[in-house]
Image (cartoon, rainbow, N blue to C red; front, side, top):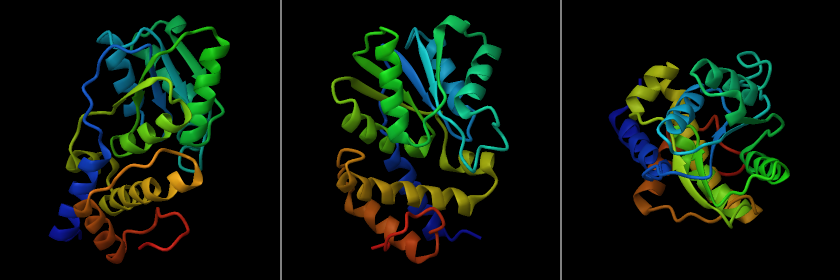
Length: 219
């Protein structure tokens, strides 16, 4: 059972993880691979709304996607997009990235190698990964404008789709920890975290929502 305080803290962090950007037409829409096929659906929706003429799906496999997506996250995303009516010539696949930094670096290299000029990127991720993906792209692809996007949904709806509220809150906490750790490691630009969000993070850590933390003390 999730306490009222823990749920309120999780909702605060959920909202902070989202950039609240208004989608607009960009050079390319990049769908970041994960266990969530909703990322592919949202990328296709944005493409069909005229927000991009080209889609790139990026991602290999991970321990959480190997069974569900044995051919690789980007490949399964592409298959989903084809099912939804996207022409094959409007989809590129980057099948090797195993983390967000590699997603950005390898997509950038793929587009440069294909001679596709890019000045703006519509970056599509899971809802609680928007800010992390944005901060990573700003570090590793600083010359392009980045617009973050994800499937519009509430925390309650996302928890219902996953079926495990503690796991979801653990993931929110882990993503926020990385926003604080990774700038010092050169993985992303620094993102100020408001004091109320830090307070929510600390309370959730002390309440035991720690399974997705990187191996470092939870301050």
